Image (tube, rainbow, N blue to C red; front, side, top):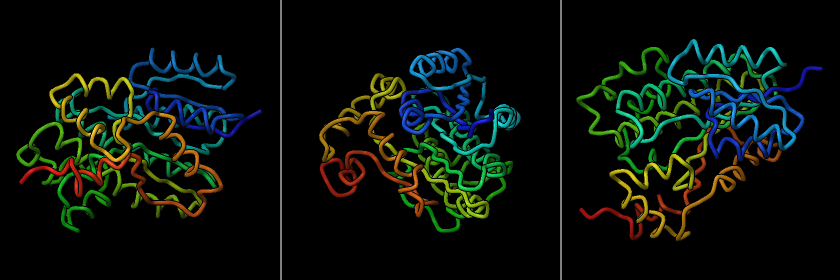
Length: 277
């Protein structure tokens, strides 16, 4: 018997927390660049009563994304997408961040949108970083939103001379994620489907620990200490938001981004985290 299928990209803690909330009774296909990560996550989930199959999937490669989707279609209709894949500023160089977090996310949203079933829903994990960078012009935002995916990395604003460092590249990628969600929500809506993004703050995961131990570690530790919540967050708190967005209770929500950052962005603009001029 075929089941509704969840495509889950990025076998990390946030993706797992979301999958546990929405995955009961569904076939879950988890893809990760490292097959061993996907396999380990699938084993954990299967031992908890879920139905998960692991595959190798490279978010920076369109063919790999298409193979990921095709694998899911073998089990049934694609009903949901969880995109929690990506790299952080301390994990990769500028080129890789743009290829994975910006281009890859755009391709995944585009391709899943072509096959998502009526009534389907997706969520992609962005970041508070996209909200902290200076505002782009309306023309630049539209280019990030609407440019053909294969032309995205050729945009002038994404050329090496215009990207200061890996953090800037990450911020641009996450700003692009938010704009692509808006753009794709219109296309998904033609099929009666919805897509949103969540922008977490400092969530304790292996990726975050890499950042704590990286060159901007003190900045991140200060961020959660001085945000209104006064602490870092957990993957389950992000999953709380995703559960709403992917349920019938969120049926009127599409094409938008939800900050889940303990108020860090608010503090960055209007509180103790505001940079000195």
